Image (cartoon, rainbow, N blue to C red; front, side, top):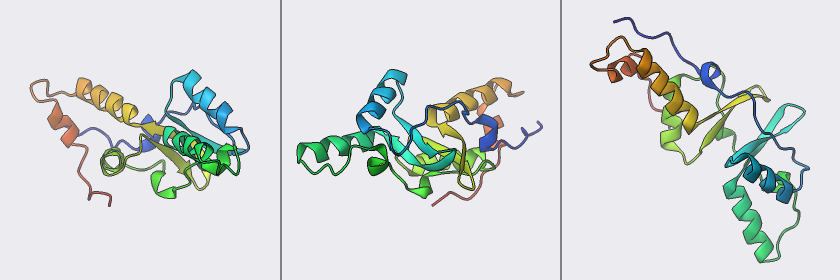
Length: 156
């Protein structure tokens, strides 16, 4: 059985994304998330990745507003800027899976330097996994084909 070719983030990332800007009103951003039925979106400034505005960020806005502590209603004030939640375009498939296992994040922006290239969600990983299983020459044990992707040390 020949192993599948190495699969990296750029091979299965989503490139057509709903993006937000840091100076966008957070309530408008929430409406956009709801309209597109997504739980979060990357925040960019002319293609430069700045962070993610997610449902969790929206909850913080609601709490701050309830306690009258909202200094701003702009996306940039509430977005998550953790760079530990981003991946490079050459991040291996299994490293992406391990990152999802080790974090609460639902999406991982794919960035090259500071430029947003795309995003991978948990659903993207599941979709690609099922495609790989369908392509498996081992119809009796298709999960063995996934194991041929090669394990790497877990991301801490």
